[in-house]
Amino acid sequence: MTGPAAVTPPPGRDDAGDPDGSALAPGPAPRDDAGAGLAISSTGLTKRFRSGQVAVDGVDLAVPVGSVYGFLGPNGSGKTTSIRMLLGLLRPTAGSHRLLGEPMPDRAAQVLPRVGALVEGPAFHPYLSGVDNLRRTDAADRTVDPATARDRIDRALDRVGLASAAGKRYRHYSLGMRQRLGLAATLLRPRDLLVLDEPTNGLDPQGTREVRSLLLELAAAGTTVVLSTHLLSEVQQVCSHVGVMHRGRLVAQGPLDELGARSAARAAVVSPRPDDAAAVLTRLGLAGIRHDGDAVTASLGDVEPEAVVAALVHAGVPVRGFRVLTADLEEMFVELTGQGFDVSA
Amino acid sequence: MSAPEATVRAGVSTRFLRSELWLVYGRRRNWVGALVLASVPVILAVAVRLSSSGAQGGPGFLDLITSNGLFVALAALTLELPLFLPVAVATIAGDAVAGEANLGTLRYLIVTPVDRTRLLAVKFAAMVVFTISATVLVAGVGVLLGLALFGGGPLPTLSGTTLSFAEGLGRLALICGYISLCLVALGAIGLFVSTLTEQPIGATITVLVLTLASQIMDAIPQLSAIHEYLPTHYWLAFGDLLRDPIATEGLRPGILSALAYVAVFTTAAWARLTTRDISS
Image (cartoon, rainbow over all chains, first blue to last red; front, side):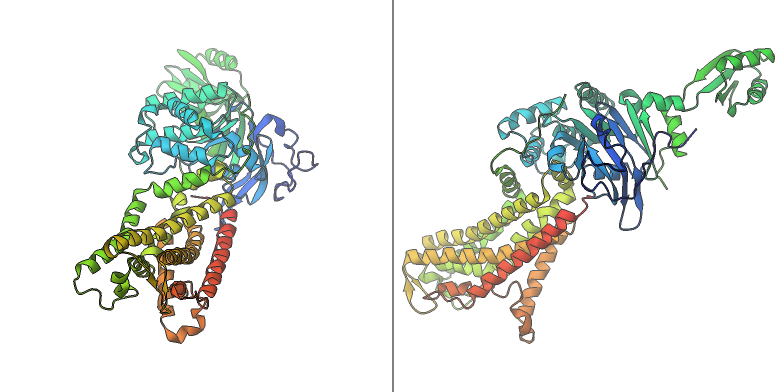
């Protein structure tokens, strides 16, 4: 099974956004009334660059409040462009979106302070120390109390494990330390939403674990986290929801376990006579038969596993082992995009 | 759980501007630049002091230095106005937006969020403060060293009269103000160029090329029709402030020209920055 079943394109996606941005306005955007439960909602978000390339094409995101949302896709599939539009860095060619229920970009000044973001890697002044860089970031935020800056900066550095390197110049930081500083900048004030683009990039395994537990801690406290990543294992460990981008389109979106269920489970038979086993599976109508030594696997489709076992025994095929494999995320991903993590053509 | 209401704190906050000034004045590169600016009056004063014959001719005010220490400041400003001061201003102005874009910090400022108009206002204000401080640095070092080596006293004017020492200092302050205004006009051009690119060096060089091209065209009599529109055309009109009474035929258009350049290019920079996609 493939296809964007979880996503229903709304009508009127070519309208250049919701002009008055009012939640009360009757209109084609079906999510506006449901926006209450969503930390991010977008309708027909589209970005066509001046070169004519359509980087993002009619994306309807729905990130539930309180979820940890894995934003997946091959390089060049439009993830970063989408994130930049969501945060108001890029102007959408068409479509509209809300952050924390507020229309963007009209309410950017009110809503963005509640959003922490790490976009395309950290960026700081190289000749300033880590703590001075955070001081600079904090000074730019007009919604925080300057009197508490020192405390908040120290606490943020401590949370990401940078307290001991706080006085070191940013230019001397390793990639992992830079990532941590970028995360610290998002923790300078309480946030309702974190949008993190590849937050564990450049971290060693220990650092990756630390960041992962930090994210889970934040999520447990009620912060919605959007995590764009290449690491499927990371998604499986921390995400409750996923959205998969492919060639500028959102090809699937929903709770992780539901998406997993929609993906075909496979039966695996271990037998000394794999060819005979394969013949039985074929007769039952199972597709995608693959041989792997004395094991044979095939997509179960609608066939019940017990019916497969019965048929094998009935046909006199010796069965040494039988297992049902639920599709893992990577398989689902390949199924949805028709490719692995290669660059989108 | 919800983060506390994100309300902008009441009152005018200078925190971001102070942070910006701290970035400008805390940077080692800018200290080296300041050292270069300050070295000209030093070299000038020491060279004149050491040459026993006294200054014979030389560019503006040089021959007057031995008569009054204030002329060290005036000579240094005259010498630095064509290139050194423009380099300093172009460096800061070119870096303003392009530097942040180049580092990637621009996207983080925008999502903080810093309103784009406010960002430009703070960048412009920091550039103005820097320009004034650079001019005052040159004049200040010149005055201090000049007084130490040649003494003060009444200041002879270009009209042949003399002004009291205090009045002379006042005139020097006015000259610093006028030169700063001229350089701020250049800085406004730099700020606009800085919003067009992600390469701060490119923006700086563009402004310097414009400055030099303007001076070259100003020196070609056949181009006199456009002279009054050149950004550097009225720069040397600060000499009017050394007349008694102050002449205004060069100053007035000079001030208007500088204000016009500031208005046009800050508006252009605003139009550009507030509409552009931040893709850096």
